Length: 96
Image (tube, rainbow, N blue to C red):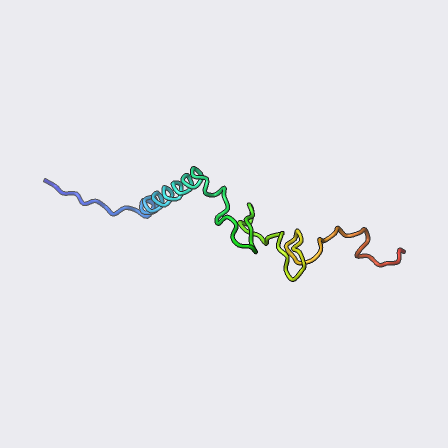
């Protein structure tokens, strides 16, 4: 009876068997997160009195907060709201 030795797997086969479990794990995690809706809610509710949930950034500065008597504007800075610039606001004051 002859015994044949199996050759070791090639590099392509090693990569395939290394990546298949990784792909399966990532796909399972993605399906679980989408099925439970975990990605749709804020991670920590209201984080604190300073930070609130934001659908894009996950958190932002609380716009209702007042710091040293100055409210937070829409851009997240203390003080008044920024107004749109007037026409020719960067040009010289004297027309040509």
